[in-house]
Length: 332
Image 1: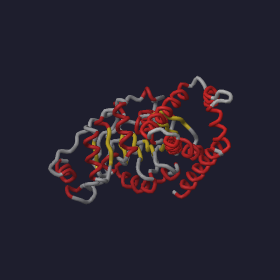
Image 2: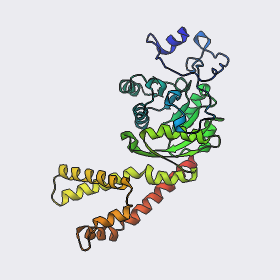
Image 3: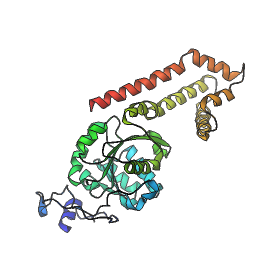
Image 4: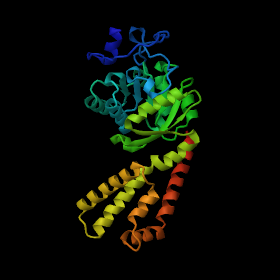
């Protein structure tokens, strides 16, 4: 093992990792070609947690029993790492595979204790959950690279937009799969994700996915056919809100405010309005009516927006994004 460690890590010490052994070790296959008789990109087997049979919910699956590997350390991958650590996951139970050297060094600086690896196979060796956080076009290739070390009972949780459950199950045969659609506010722990179970995924796997994605926001369960609509609404939704914010700032400048003041007013208006909605005491229609006095300024503004077809434009935008998501899914 010492020879293998030096082969893969050079003179640097191999990163340590605490793993709770709850079941038998993974059986090693025949050695592959390479120095020391082992393929340097396929890790030797290490203890893995037992299957999750008998666990009935998130609270029954302690974080100390969950080992998570992220395939892809980009913006969403980094957001998940930070969220998991803040939610109480041990940094030493987390691994991220990232091919870009500069990004690997950045992740090592940001998340001390997290193991950062250049190879998907090294990342997934003892993972309870494997999160696929790469570009949709790279999903099949990354899962193929991970497959020699991917445990038979490891949950594959994909956040790659448009990649269907069928495509994921073909790339990771025999493993339980959960497909998810998060959105970018996950970066500030305020995201929303929808999840859908594959043919081998149970309620336990869905609960585990909820525990993982719940670290960066809210999670809802839907059937896979609804995920295109989720993509069109909440997946693309932040862009709609940012466009509205951009337009309101320009409007503030038009009517005589400085850009700095306009931006402050718009941002806090959006934050406060969202907080009122999230309070859940009244729906959007009632809240809008409460601001709209008969014959007042808001009524005059809303008349202009309705005449311009803003409501219909949002309906068409979400429908177009939903259709495009479906097209991209068929392409994979």
